[in-house]
Image (cartoon, rainbow, N blue to C red; front, side, top):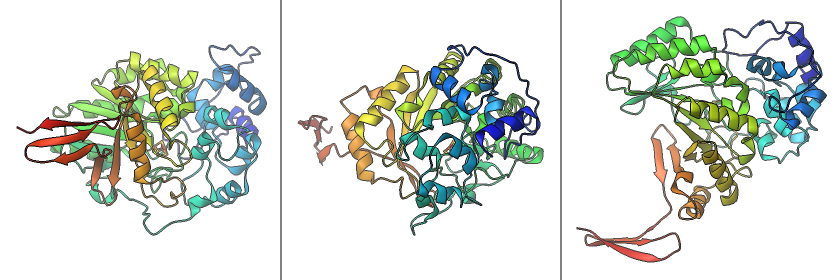
Length: 413
Ligand code: SF4
């Protein structure tokens, strides 16, 4: 379905939200309020221009409505053709996505990539290419073995004191390098019974003090569903902290509404783990969304996957991490790209990741340097990596090399 057809369907109330986890979404009514002006404070000039061209019937209010954004997401080749000239490699991939990670791009994120070249970093994050269809021997559908660490549906219990709770398989935009590409985007919804069993599991495991709610993207769910999930987890006495993993402020900043903030605020301490890949993702809209979350009192961290040709150099990473700090988001993890099927065009060497960390440490604020980790294939968990700063380590001393290459000694006592 192309962008304009999407728009027309939404106005006819016929829109379908493939795989949407929001209970409010399917068949939701939309109201068209004629509006000629597009005030800058609501829609940036970039978005206003994109909206006029591709969604001529949309109003500013509709553009800023996260449910409209979801209903009008680009989910197929025709929609994409309206906003960019597709390469042969992209066409081939788009025509062969059946059974694989689907395509979904919100109109907002589409406004960042329309009329770009195939090599554009943000475009590569969401538009598949033919390399994605090729699987090399070391690649596995579930490289972190999450399925075998899942005692009940939705729960992954690998580390001693914390669990991952995948509450939905839906995202507002799908990243082509997604670690959970084997499960996200599939219509495998948790039912009420599944939720109750998952709460029961956490309740029965007193060692669990930290619950990471992830997916898919939990913030594609309705406020009411989030309230239900958070309330049940917060009522468990031994759960100390709750985290939500989301990319919504990056791909769907309209979702960060006052009502959402009010819902989440009831469940502090609540940490929010964001996922940024490139400095160009930090737009005014995204910054506003993150500032709103920070004002709501949620500590914000960001995870970034190291991606070939997208962010695999010191300058891009430094710019990203500096911009994140400016919007009160602390860079948290830099991940080596997981060995998922069709990821070879995204993967760099581990040496490259170490080079980047070496190029940051000492040259910028410690707050701007995330921990570089390899999530061990086979379910071994996250393993931190550092450039080699140790020259020699004996029982009497450790000899170290600093960021300028100067060697110093520290006694072992
Ligand atoms: S937002 Fe996260 S879960 Fe969704 S596709 Fe991207 S990496 Fe995967």
